[in-house]
Amino acid sequence: GTCVIGLQWGDEAKGKLVDLLAPRFDLVVRYQGGANAGHTVVAGSETYKLHHIPSGILHADVQNLITPGVVINPATMIDEMKGLLARGIDIKRNLRVSERAHLVMPWHMIEDRLINAQKVRGESIGTTNRGIGPCYRDKVGRTHAIRLADLIEPHRDERIATVAQAKRELLLGLGASEEELEIIKPEMVQELAAQWGETLRPMIADTTDYLLDALEDGKQVLFEGAQGALLDIDHGTYPFVTSSNSSGVGVCAGAGVPPRWIQTVIGVCKAYSTRVGGGPFPTELTDDTGSKIRELGREYGTTTGRPRRCGWFDAVAVRYTARLSGVTQLSLMMMDVLSHFDELKICIAYDLDGQRITRLPSSAEDLRRCVPVYETLQGWNSPVDDATHVDDFPPAALAYVKRIE
Ligand code: IMO
Ligand code: MG
Image (cartoon, rainbow, N blue to C red):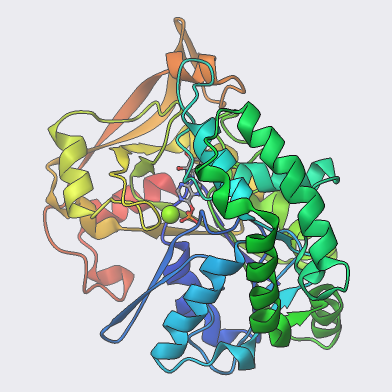
């Protein structure tokens, strides 16, 4: 198997790469995260924005799996399917979704909104408000979780009524209004759940068994990461992270695949850095250069439309995530955005309280105090969009790539 892993704070153009590579594979697998992801795939004149569905979906011969580590919002997933269907892509044929996957329920969305308004260590996490954190918390907590399989089980209505009641009390305690809680009345959620179950039934499968069979049969599998390694719950810039293992180390647990099946890890990063939401970002540029990168790179969120924070390439952070994810190859995206600068900077170390360090501090407070040590490189000031071979690149552009390499 081959993995595509984001090495920064998400939005590295993983979806574009997966779509490009998909025809060489038999299967594309989404294994963590949920509708917090926004993967834009452009095919011909059409632009597809995918949140749950793997970016291999546009290729009819490729099977797409959503495995146990993903959290699914059935309502938005069904919308996504309808959008694809309307453009002639019949996902029933080449999409399978794990019965073990957990569901993001309406109460998770409310809870995320209520909690996201609060500050952690002086700053809001700035989640995507997609209910991701609350859903993963219920999964780990085990008492109030609902899995995809529950939608087609006889105990469904009973289970939903119990959980809805518990959630009602919890959300009232968090300051929700009675009005806001109308949508989680048991009868309403039960009705929705029945519809979701009927719509999704043909796609519900044991993806773990399917995937292991495929690997044992010699099939080529591409694992599509969501978010980026710096947002990894265990290894990222905690607590300003997402709630899943979004670095390379998350593939096995999320997909249900033992390490022996993974040979190639493609780390994806932009030629500069972006971050959306709160948390430390040492190379952030709040000046005109930052705005210039944002406009040239159209750096606005796919899922939330928020402007992304922009800055220079951070080699300290990417070296850390590249090692952590075990990358065997690096894919450098959005080089064309840097075609319009006289000088470019790469952060090669941090100055932390007067000490020069080259490792990523584990504490958000320390990282916030880190001042980047920059190396300045020459810009190339000419387009690279049409380059298809190394010889097509201006020498300064090649030097920039080589330095990162
Ligand atoms: P893709 O797959 C960029 C960020 C949010 C927030 C933090 C936690 O498109 O690269 P969450 O809603 O997950 O609890 O939010 O993580 N975040 C992303 N940033 N791209 C993503 O996905 C992201 N998914 C989550 O902005 O800071
Ligand atoms: Mg995104």
